[in-house]
Length: 175
Image 1: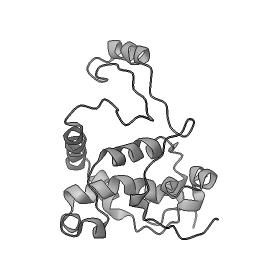
Image 2: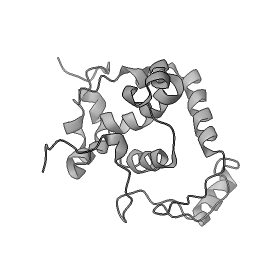
Image 3: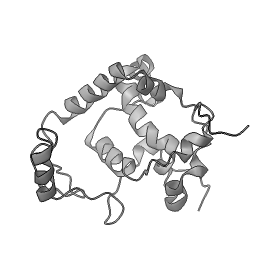
Image 4: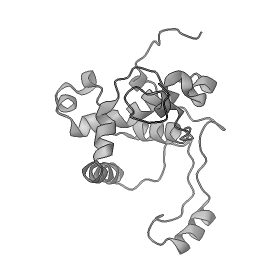
């Protein structure tokens, strides 16, 4: 039923992979081919199944991701601004063809971005460190990584959401 109030908070609903609803990983042969032209960028080619709970991640995968996020937050002021600017008004929701097509709340641009913001709050905001879940903060877990994988690749970056966002300062909007 559309418009019904969800029974669980969005953070408590895990990503469920079913054939056809996620981006398939590259075959090891393609990764090998790319590794020859861009050495050091792709790691070791390996076979892995998205639907399994063993993605063959390195032991320190969380540190690798959080260090990468920290590096980008320090380098790009725009990323830090993006993490704090959304007022969660939902003006973008009915502009996203993936949300309209699936009806999945995590496909709303505002919530898709919130998947990353929740980890940002946990790691880099005072409110997130003190209030934790009350501030919308959550720890980077394998379940969160699975959500990132599923929902990031369902976005085609058409930017319709940004055209209708009241906090975006895009000159394309007509008065």
